Image 1 (cartoon, helix red, strand yellow):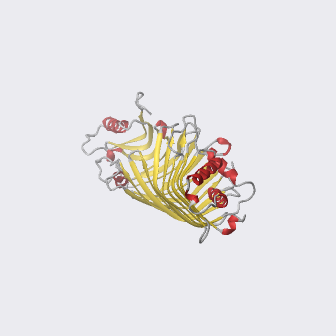
Image 2 (cartoon, helix red, strand yellow):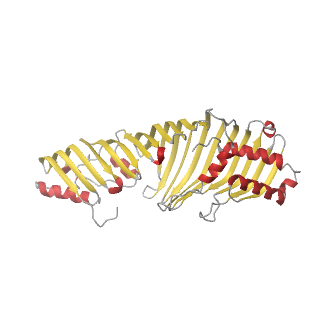
Length: 428
């Protein structure tokens, strides 16, 4: 589906029409009759009931429109809370726009807006109908518009997914952009905070963006990111993180997206990542990759709220590095291959997180180093192996670990295989 006119163009068209058809005297624009007329018109545009709490029109120094306490109702079956609530929308347009010229918005400011996208158990959503109607408002052909300054202040997004029973909320959304126009690069700044379950986070990024609705292409380049995340099981002070993206692109004609040159540093771990999404023919396919630089796993685990256990060798878990490729198909995530190094051990394998399935092959491993300091190993290789398996078994995973050369209780074992089976009664 191609949306050849962005929301900015819709706002411009609505603003221009209202300035022409509701250009009543200054006091008249504040009457209930005028507000109802605007509400009815916006209801026809959106296909949903709309209420407007206040209306103000000005013509100097340029034509402008201010709507206050705007609410767009939900489609049937999505609850009573409005799909979109806006504290205030202010739009200033050029004089040429009023007389049939291309939509030129001097400024658009949206304050205290809350959007409530939702999915039903059957997968139906409450936003596609609205987007379709707004896209049709622009008509056919290439769009020609510009926005001098766009600001979103104190925005919020509340998402409900009945298919999974999940809910999350983004707050304090702020966006600033200048000199927006089709296929023209412009500077962009975005900041937001969010709450999911027991965690809170906030981040901000800046970079360059480009909108090309005529071709259905959207992109951002040179993005820098800084943020913070807190909540259980993280330490009280939370974690700071930073990173960036070389490029992020989305092609609505082909329904594909890509992220390249991604970087992230958190809890002492530095990594690079990228992803490709293809939604053509309704088959959503996501491929991604991640590679870290060497890092100290003990420090990282403690920072993430899951300290590693003490070991007989204090130098164990001293350094780690890994890389992986992942594929998400029809909700099933597969990590293959996974490759890395832990201390002196080189390993590779694959995993299916939802099934808690892990398969690993390692070149060599000194198991004695990773036992608890008070673990009695003596010279009993069998007892040592049983102790290792018992510790792994507490993780409730389906694992098979093959080791070409294992050192156990001072002896060497070749082609050792450790197998851990999940509790059949456990919930996946």
